[in-house]
Amino acid sequence: MDIHFEVRSALGKLIRTTHSHWELITILKHPEIDGKETEVKKCLSDPVEIRMSSEDQNVYLYYLPYEKYYICVVARHLNEEGFIITSYITDKIKEGETVWKK
Image 1: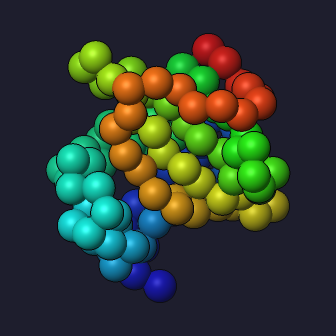
Image 2: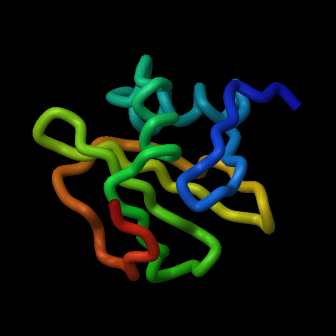
């Protein structure tokens, strides 16, 4: 597996992404997140809020303030690990149950 980076999240999960998946996120889906690996890692390890997806109880949305917006990292948790589904910049924290707050 071509791991691009992995980070221990605020919930204690080891969250990772591969080079190919990171390229998919940053080139095809959310180019605004390209070059922001440092911020994405901080969003996972030191977020201001974590919410559980209202559609999937194994998916969590991590939020970190960024300029006048938020970076959101969406990650699927599997036991003690997880992986990044996507990451993007948003103007507000989405709906969902808050599971962790700074």
